[in-house]
Image 1 (cartoon, rainbow, N blue to C red):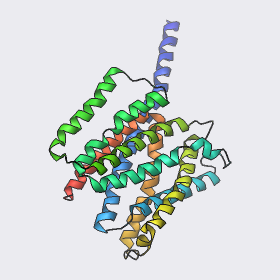
Image 2 (image 1 turned 90 degrees about the horizontal axis):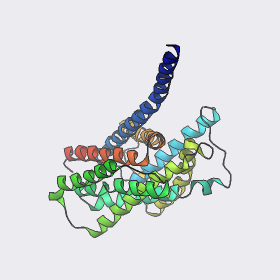
Image 3 (image 1 turned 45 degrees about the vertical axis):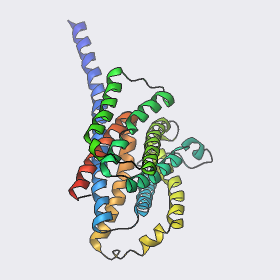
Image 4 (image 1 turned 90 degrees about the vertical axis):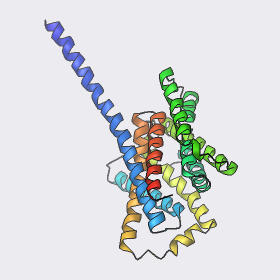
Length: 288
């Protein structure tokens, strides 16, 4: 009897130990999906309702807020990540390059493709992520998961088949965007070793290194000048939404890391695809 009770108690302890992990996986995925969707709505208002001319400057604002929040949190000893040294860029490589490629190819593809076609082709991020996780991380997936992934692709093509239109340049950019997105998710998962940079170190130093080339691109294209000359900077509602976008950008980067940390890069890619579909439905309500 005693042995049976001990075994039962051990089983309950083991089950309760697994529960937080399962809850963390689910909550991190929901957190990521919610942040993604909210950021889509706020950015849509800024870029269409207010006609803010610079998505790149929005990105710079989001990276700046990310750096400030994490640095202040580190000084306050709320979080910990290693101080900068010459090995940090090597440890982080190639994440900053992947993010910049993802950002540029994403902006280019959305401007050249219809929204249904963009939504269809973005689904290829999911099988690419599965493939890269197998190659880079050595992860193996069951046949059921592989079949489910290709069912998502087939369903997307069926849903938007009537909107297919040939645009070679748009196709090239969106497939590059898929590759950069998948690679960014997989390598982010690989770099989050607690004994190396950890998730906060990855987030902080990635934002630091990303901000420099993004700022250079913004200045060289005249994007920054258009943003500084924008006529709504005295509008309180616009400023509130701009700051909200910057804060949500930080939450999105953080929630992406959490989702990848507690789940797999494939899970993050699937949640991201759901977000793209939600954003597509919202954009349709604007008549775009």
